[in-house]
Image (cartoon, rainbow over all chains, first blue to last red; front, top):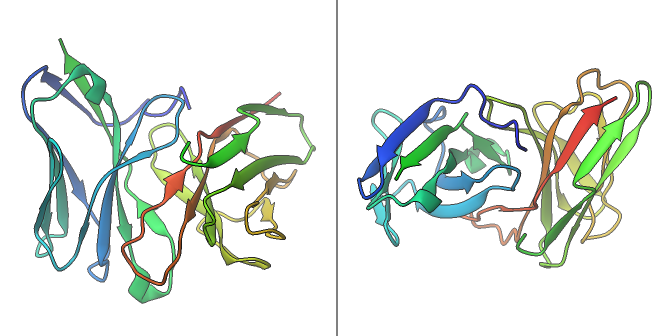
Length: 114
Length: 115
């Protein structure tokens, strides 16, 4: 809730700049990845997703890049706005292991300076 | 949020007491989940259920119990065995068509604190 993110890594950007948030995932068998945005005291909101057979996917002002070789995921936000300030989580899906649930990373706090 | 209702928003537990967090969804989703969120950490899976009357333990199930008697409801009980229950609890659901690329929809969370 309100206390989420006390020790999270923080990315501080100027309004209008592009933001890049990185995530290392754990399992080479993961076949689906999602980025969520969480504002203080609220539940996570879906931003964008990507399947493992793709290396890039674009949405409105957001792009997700997937590098399976090094198990790395990134979220790019173009023309960052104050409303983008939040905590961002990546999550991976390990369906092949029989686990029918997303596994979340520890998150990154994005602060947008006006 | 998105048809998932969690209640209450804030809950206080006395030592030795069991408390139950409510989660209801009207999305007609088959699968439901409970995650716990602590400061500085991501979401950790407590329990999940893919169909009515069936559920599986997640990574931190000890001290918690669930039931899934109805498709739309997945209550979480925090028992007295959970010694550090203070956290933000998130319920989520998923349609569960069998496809791997199904995102979770989250409720707005319940903040549980110990008195």
